[in-house]
Amino acid sequence: MLLRLLATATLCLSWRAAFAAASLTQESDLELANDAVLADDECAEAGNSDCALNAIQIRGQSKTSAVEVESRSSYEAEAGAESEALNQVSEQQPLTPQEEKLGAASIWNYRQNCWTPCNKQSGNCENFCGPGNACCRYGRSGPPECTGVKFWPSMSFHTCVIGTAPLNPNAIAPKRLESMADAHPSKQESSAYYKPENLLLTKPSTAPVLSFYVYRAMSDSNFPPENVNAANLDGVMWYLHNEVVVYTPRKFDITRILRFKVTYKAPEPLFDKDMNFGVRYAFDSGRCTGPGNCNADFKKYGYFVGCNYVWQYPTAQFKDAVYYPNSTWYSFPGPCSDRDYRNHDTSCVQQDPGGACSGTPSGQGDCTYNYEPAGEVKLDEIVGMREDYTRFVGRGGREYVRGLDMGLMFSFWNFKQNVQANERRVAQAQATFAKKYPDSEVLDGTPCDFDYGKFYR
Figure 1 (cartoon, rainbow, N blue to C red):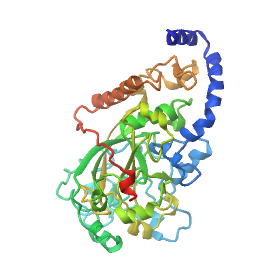
Figure 2 (cartoon, one colour):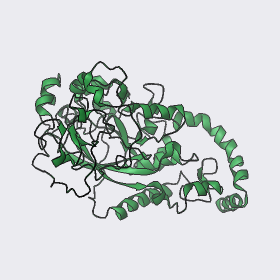
Figure 3 (cartoon, rainbow, N blue to C red):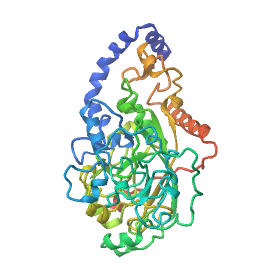
Figure 4 (cartoon, rainbow, N blue to C red):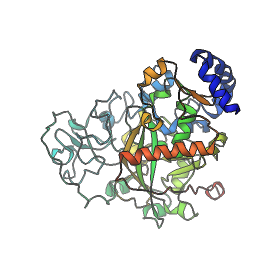
């Protein structure tokens, strides 16, 4: 009865009055929020576990300094870098509409290893990559067509990238080549540079191959999920509820949820301790900031995928995540994980390759996971926003007001600490993906088996 009276009273108020009434509560919550909610993967304090919160999203353009940091850090080369190889990585610019679509029709064989089909050389490869496109590798020197690349589908092997030649609208993409899909993408090159001290990391592991979906809340810009964090659907919905829809407009211009299919095989030293997953790291502009010593752990265990339930170590401060009971975050180490994107060079790309590889991962230290785009849905589709968002805000609507624990003229996010309501929200997100992609593979969730005691023993 009390909730009904509150809802009725709220609707009777003008949005200005209601929002003003809530603001006092929001201000009183702000100090706690700074510790428990407003943290970010791009936060200023390296090693702060709060960095994890925004790691499951990628920001849109904004005037705030924090957002500017990320827009500068998205796979750009440091000005005056000593390595000529990284001249191919241009300063990040706004992507074209074609580049803004993952797997855009302008790229054939999206995120496949193009090295063998393109005659084992970098450069123009229209027969496999599409008209005007090239086969290039991040962090390597190459022909002119591999310079100035603004978006890399993969940072870990040769991949097709958007070229500058005009597209042929009548071109037909070649049939996908499965024969090369399971090859380690750079075994010969990798073995020459990646020299793990633990020899178990040079051999395929005996761990099972796991397949699962991960999600990222994103703006309309795209970046590959390496040296980043991602979440299961429960985790990304908790993040949206706590960090995005509490702001108007939505924080970081979040507009959609992207889904990736991950195939993962744990490296042997980790599996020998009865774990598939290691500690879940945070990343600041692509640099691993802990907890602990990332490099030491990667040397010991290989480039493992990390995970944690959001309310457990290393983010136990997010205690209210228990109301999204299965909320899980993951970390995916890529090349040069000990430095930010602006400071990548050829040496670190070769010697610190990360765990991403093409095809089925072997479980060797530098070939533990593969990912592929598996669809996206607009956030408006999930929450039932049937009118233009700007118009909704202009007439006084708010998706969720923290102090009221409900929205104004909007009910999808009402009652954050209600487990049943949160389960309905996650189910709605699942249903939205299923409706849009009815033929997509159904993958059961993979439990996070990270064990603090075993890992640090």
